[in-house]
Amino acid sequence: MKIKKGISLIALIITIIVLIILTAAAVLTGFEIMPEAQLAVFYNNISNVQDAVILKRNTNLTHYVLNSGAELEKYKWVGIVNQYTENSAEEGIMPSFNDAVIQGINVAKIDFIVKNNMSISDEEFDKYYVDSNGIVYYDGFLYDGITYYNRLVTSETIPATSPEPTPNIAEGPTDGSFNTLKGVNSPKLAQGMVAVYWDSNGNEITGNDANFVYNDWYDYSKTSLDFGTDYLESKWANAKTSDGSYWVWIPRFAYNIQSGFHAATAGPIAIDFLKGTSDVGASDNTTWNNVLGENKWNIHPAFYYTDSASNTTQIPGYWIMKYMSSQEYSSDEGSTWVPSNVTYQLTKAAGNSTYYRLVSKPGIQYWSQMRTFNVQFNSALYYNEGIGINDLDSHLIRNIEYAAVSYLAHSAHGRNGTMAWSATCQTQYAGHSQNAIATTNTQYSSNGNASGVYDWCCSHTVALYCTAGTPTGWTSIATADAKYKEIYGTYGYEPYGAAIYEISSTQGAHSYGGTSNWGARGSQGFTCNGDTRCHSLVRYQSFGYSHSHCAGDSASSDVTGFGYTRITLWVN
Image (tube, rainbow, N blue to C red; front, top):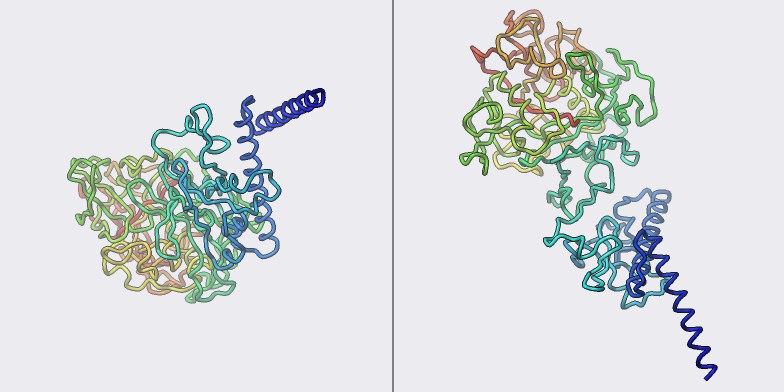
């Protein structure tokens, strides 16, 4: 009897010690002390599995970066997702998170390699899953009427309706900060904007999709070390607004026209992406020339603006309409929208009694025969069109912003010197053809693939104040805040980065192809025959083509413009 009593006492002591250890483990993982042994065991086990997954993923990231330079988004899952091996990653197969759906989250079974020496039975370990963010889930542990799914989620914290799958957008920055791994500023998403890209099968993947992979979103790497013809790899970041419009991110950079400056022969343009809103290059260069000239490093002036109060704001980049502006019409007060082929309409936000809005979508006829004040007014009020974005500044594209896209497109981060713009605007449909989608007609993209800016060959009405006159139109570009426009003098006196003097040998010929009738409406550059109502310049063709056709800007005459256009966005 004494022996039996002694054994019972020892067993009791051991049980108490185990409970103390388990509840201590629960405290260390950030939860209240749970006196119930079963729940304490659950928290202890799932915490061990979660820590093991984190350790394995970090080990993968370190190993493959140092040893093979592999695509981390694939290799980091080796030995974590069930039966996902190094061979799977080498073959370019992405892990599938479709083994189960737990509270609306797509998850994959965890490979038994992770189990290692854990004191968890095989049968029990088979109930553990991982989502695409690396969060470990359990298929449901029920205790006292509450179901526990992971270290943070219970049936009490999950809403009655399952949420959208958690996107992988959290795997990288989306605030315009410098992404060290990418070597470029991250796209700055405004509220209501969602990341988007197209996979190798042409499927559109958005940041709300469970299979969204941050690393597949963008890559502005050089396509070739030489000034050659390889331009198919650079991937520019895209986003969508709630109206279905597509946008392309132009990150802050400095440029260098290495040869062909103010000449009849085109030369390469080098790019050094800048860090955040600083003047420090990805190369760590901090010395800039900022002058007109060949082989001069200049911080492109598209990435800052100065308002009428002389306040200068530096920006990490800006969003530009992926497609030339088109209009949509609604007959039911904005509930549904259809493409509209009418011309020069004010939008609803700009005061039209009928529902029109500007969009950036493929396959819709360009917005044409526009009035200048309509262009500027509609562009400035884009954010009021019900797209759900409050932290942005929308405006008619400035000439300097037009030029920055052209320089990036011409560089090794775009088409790398090739040109494929001829006759691409004859159809007058965004994306080059009626019913086009993002993955069609990619030869007309600024970087030769679906991620680029389309319709860049077409004439663009840009916010350039051509003369010193004062127009009568109250919505004119001339009377707009200084940050929304530019004021140029005669040829050769415009700023560096403007894609005019820098890339042309004379007023009438540009080194990057075609000719330019600079000053076609007058002999003084932008004077437009002295018409003081002229306050926009129409830029023709893709890279440096210029034309001095000026769109009149008067509320009384409302002179029709000559070019199409698009909007750019600054995210505040």
